[in-house]
Image 1: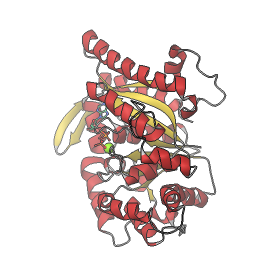
Image 2 (image 1 turned 30 degrees about the horizontal axis):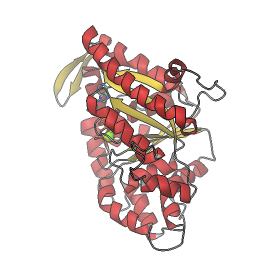
Image 3 (image 1 turned 135 degrees about the vertical axis):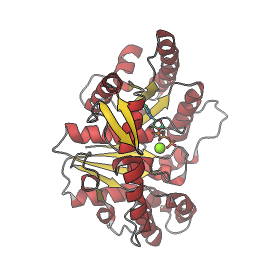
Amino acid sequence: MAIYAVWNNKGGVGKSYLTFQMSCEYARQNPNKTVLVVDMCPQANSSTMLLGGMQDGETKLNEIHVQSNRKTISGYLENRIASPYLSPRTGATYLTHVASINSQVPNNLYLIVGDEQLETQASKVARATLPGPADAWRTVHLWVADLIHDIKTSWNHEDSCVFIDCNPSFSIYTELALSASDRLIIPFSADGSSKRAVKAVLSLVYGVQRLSTDPRSEFAINNEQFRLRVPEIYMYVGNRLTQMNSTSASAFKTVVDEIGDEIWGVWQTKPNAFCIHPSGAPTPVSKKTFKAMFQHEINDANTASVVSNALGIPISVLTSGRQTVSGKTIVVNQSQLDKQVPNIRELVEKIE
Ligand SMILES: Nc1ncnc2c1ncn2[C@@H]1O[C@H](COP(=O)(O)OP(=O)(O)OP(=O)(O)O)[C@@H](O)[C@H]1O
Ligand SMILES: [Mg+2]
């Protein structure tokens, strides 16, 4: 049982899309486990997909957001802002059972719904780290860990797996998400700016400085001071790779390899920042074995991905043929599904 944060400092790289696909596929492959998604992004994209997509999911999300007792991440955080240093142990009351709303999603999947109020709550959360007890910073950074702990307690600590979809910005709520996680999955897109974003992740979370004169992130410094763990790097995932022709395939490969080299460099100086998997596997000794363990690739499934996202149907159960999206008929080709479904399946098989 582990808690995975899905984060990259760059927007639009597929954090929410992969959270949706990975959590559904993990639940499908592991019917005896309970799966939890915590949506820590104010845009609530993974919640929308899980709750039924662009139309049904949005409608459901709006219904949840107007309830006086918000069953969302912000509902829980409001509870904690009122009780910053003592856990009210109310986390499980904020759960949503996804299949009760979207029957396309496996029955063993639960959600803490995302909420746009995260943005307005951020300053209140940050303020709570300042006054109060000497370890206020630490206690506040464990709020999401407390939430997950409450949920697991309500499940009698049954075997479970947790995915946290993060916002790209390194805001206080992203810090809380990272502090709650054991492991980090870093999606990136194969464009020039992804390398910089991955460097930012390494610097912000693990204190990997580009220059020795660069200031270290407060998060990295405080984690050391308050002895809080940071998630271990579990995998970095080149996402939306296109195989249209051999030129574009090799252009993508070059970018993916460059990012792989950057992370390989970190491995050589900070191997403790990584999570060897599966448990018991031998420690990689070469760049090749390192990449085999930590690097993954997910192809772009074009229309099939759009339909999966828009209708809230996990791609591994989406079938080829005609689908209706916003009143329009769209054809999903088997060849598109074949591009991505095996990638998702294999990636999830590597998630413990
Ligand atoms: N492998 C893929 N194939 C096709 N489309 C994809 C794939 N991955 C992501 N997308 C699409 O790319 C867009 C951006 O993805 P997504 O919203 O998941 O990114 P994000 O990293 O969560 O963005 P943000 O930083 O805004 O939270 C979405 O429309 C999503 O459906
Ligand atoms: Mg997102």
